Image 1 (tube, rainbow, N blue to C red):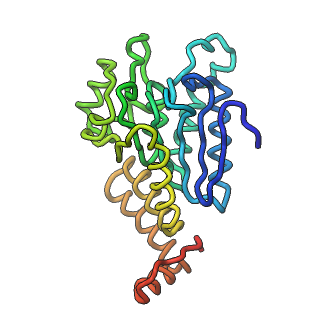
Image 2 (tube, rainbow, N blue to C red; image 1 turned 180 degrees about the vertical axis):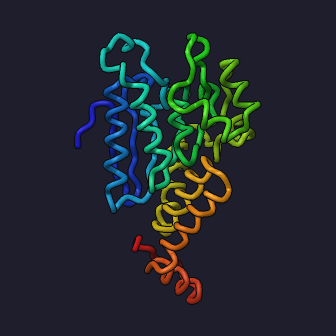
Length: 258
């Protein structure tokens, strides 16, 4: 499928979505629609086992909502569509890595929060935050819910209520990003993450993602039920047999997702 606002590539078992609305890759309705469809395409592609989302160039991951498109009649649907799209990313059966190559603000920050892993470049211009309050609005694509779950309510409130932007080092210290990359190496590091994830057992990986993502929105008893259902799914799989056999034979397992 052809996309107008992003570039979709495949490198082996890794799918790469590059946001491409220069210079700062803001989201209007069409851009959200492109992202939704690209994520769906990669999730349905059995050859893809991990996904990377990044921005073109070195200036921005994404500046969030495109204020210039505010009057577009289609944007009446963008709040709900943003939620649907970001939920699809967070609940994806394949791990999604955000390669934060520049600043990630507003909806761009919320996109990164919906990914399972975040790798951020160490650059003075690369900051992440939720500045919506400065416009008299609130984060509308999950930021008020995902950010406190990741870094705790106190720090999340500081970012959202003060409109504070933090750099890569602070984001790492606060547990918001998994790795800080040198300038020019964020995509390389993200690919290393994605390749490593692509070698894991797909069924077990899906079950773990499902257990952790859905489990955090319920109580312990319900979360354990989700975990047990995942255990039942993988226990008799060919991948489980291969994993045990490879361990006994002291070799690397070759998982097929069966």
